[in-house]
Image (cartoon, rainbow, N blue to C red; front, side, top):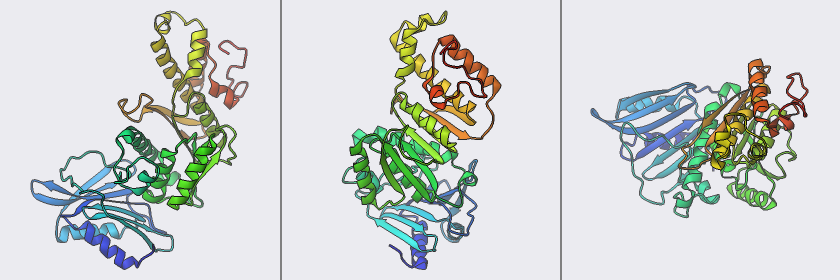
Length: 408
């Protein structure tokens, strides 16, 4: 609901200066016609040798800048400065509850207040665990089935919660403000969304924490997934989030700035990457699942010497196929005008499928050295990557091998 801006800011200021009650506050996004000097700002009380201080951590595009202020006039000046910098979103956690503020384009504050379901513990140590991008007590986690009725992440969903959060951390790192559209919503597509844990969390983070104008679509082949997810989106009142029923390859979509795919099985990841390339999507983040396609090809062909010592063992052949598949995918993305890398986005204790292909479109020409290495690799192993077929790169100006050439 909209409230008087002055009274909301007064309430916010009091919470930020409450050394006994504040847990953490996060500011992000920008109000209309303002340019905050930081991408994100965090405030929290810390206990130092000199006594308790209000700590401010300000993030620019490259690093974090930390400052500590003694409670009183010094902390008051720090808070007043933060409130004057034009942030559009504030998320404040305190022992008394959670306050969320979003200042609209008209300058009106939309405010949400929730009481804690259980006593809140404060962490005042100077060196603390990595901050959460999304509050685990946020009601949307309960709506999508990750949290229980008391607002706690379910034990059986802890791994999924951490996967989603670390995926969002990787997404946050690549979305630079200067590369985002300024005259229209950011178009985001989650291909093969399933239960849409990532879709809902990404929308919540981008729209309500980063403060971006977002048009987001989740795509899944199952009708029940579309119906369930659409009902939840309506329940949450998130007009910028919708769901479509269809395959990754054929879903009726016009394009996207950001393409996401979390654990799309086997060649479904290739389908997602191919659509991203066709759209020239600016950012692509895909965490592959199983890799059956190249595993079958490796079983059917004789391994080049001396790698028969590896492929004779089923488990090692599977791991080799995983690495080979993702290496070829990254190479093909680079040959399609992307800067691409493969990284680990979460520890293997949470999922064995913990690699992430992260790509940013540059429009550059394919690197001849990458092309030469790609051709040598597929010829050596006699494999035909599904993504190359989907991209239709054979016979193009890149002179990729055609069907029937060695290795195809």
